[in-house]
Image (tube, rainbow over all chains, first blue to last red; front, top):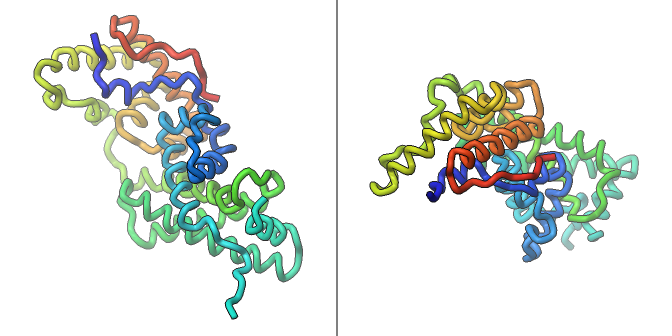
Length: 82
Length: 208
C-alpha cells in the first residue's frame, strides 16, 4: 500500500538531521555556498535535511538568503564619491 | 577574508570614533534587514505597522548585542554581513513568536485535526486508503505519543504554530521543541510501519 504524500510532509524521515543549534552555527556558510552556485546539500547534508523538516530554521534560512542577496555588500564606512 | 568583512571586523575591534561609527553603521544596517524580514514574515501574523516596527527595533538591538558578544568567533567562512544577519533572523523569529499568542485565541485542541487533509480532496479511488492511514495516524498520536509529544506535534505539525511561539509557551527553546517534534515524528512513523503501511520508514538518526 502506498502512503499518501501528505503523510511524508507531516512525518519527514531525515536520518542525518543536524538539529537547530548545530544548523544555526553554520547557516551563514550554507547560504553563501548556495549563492556561489554550489549545492550546499552536498557538503552540509545535515543542515539541508534539517531545514526541510524544521519550519523555524527554514524561515531563518529563507530570510538569510534574501538578506545576503539584498544587503550583503554593505560596508561600515562607505567610500565617498569625488 | 574579503575586504569588506575585514573593515567590519577592524571597526568592531578598534576603539574611539571609528568604533562608534562602525557600531552605528552596523545597527542601522541590522535595522534595515530586520524591517525587511519582519515585513516578509508579517503575513503569517496579523500584525500592524507599529507592532512590526517595534519587533524590528528590538530584533536589531538584540542582534547587535549578540554580534558584539560573539564577533571573536567569526571565522571568515562567509561574508561578515551574512554571518551577522543570521542573528537578525533568529531575533525576528523569536520576537514574532512572542506576538503569535496575542493574535491566536483558538484552542489547540479545538482544531487539532483541521489540518489533516480532507478525504474529499483526494481522488475517489484513493479515499479509502487516505482515510485509513489518517485514522491510523490519529490512533498513533493518541496512543503512542507522550502528552508533551502530542501537544508539540499537534500544535507545530498540524496547526502550524511557529516553533518559537511553542517554545515560549513551554518555557523552552527552539532546539528542545524541535527534538520533541523529531522524536514524535519518528515514533509515529514507526507506529504506521507496524500498522502495515509501507512508508514512512523508521529513522535511526537523532536531532542534535
